[in-house]
Length: 304
Image 1: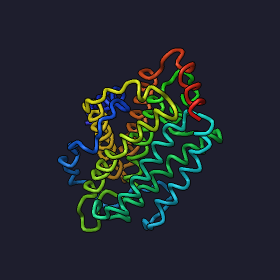
Image 2: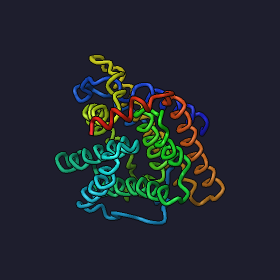
Image 3: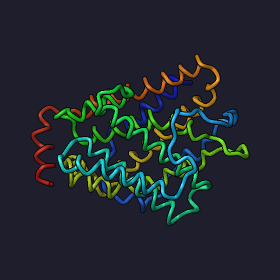
Image 4: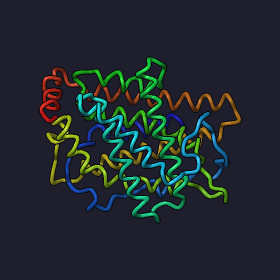
């Protein structure tokens, strides 16, 4: 099961590598199939959680999204001002979280349990903050994050590579642990997968303005590969992200299901870490262009 899931997720990653940031056709005007909603949760996943050992926003307070956004802005601004390659993912994550906050405020019926999804959002962000701070302090970080942060100093990695390295480390590596921490099953025994899959809907609304902004601020490659007016490439990217998030849910099910079996639990964790690291290496190989620093860095400097 694990190797088959890995192969499926790797295909998803390669589709995403080939299409993210390509095309500016308006995704919000398309009917985007949210196919993960058709896939049922594992009915044998037990209630309870697999705690991380710390917590934030435990009760899903309404103030949590704005607190997360404030922290993201404070971290992104100096990266943006200095054209640090880490700004690409930092801005992407900021814009995504801002859309999440708008959704729960303006469309509260989107999710069945807003405190739960708000708790998840805060824990998810904290894993990114922790990895960023640990790396900056010279402390060990998950391998997928190490590869991402190391390659932020790679002068020849194009901007989509930085974006995908951050997405991979955060979705493939961090999201399973986040979901297992906040729990996959409601108190009445029903699954929370429906709320998890609803996230795909607001992600669809982010990609169009985001790829334009990334192209304006950081790297012309986001617009050079524009296939407008065809939406096929953009649809491929969005469906690729759905695949990564579905894979994360299944890994979270495995974490919760094996939490009382130390050996099995360790193997699930090893699979998550190894898979995310392998994806990261594929991204670096696919996104490195010799001599590209002569284009990307001066472009960003001129844009600022």
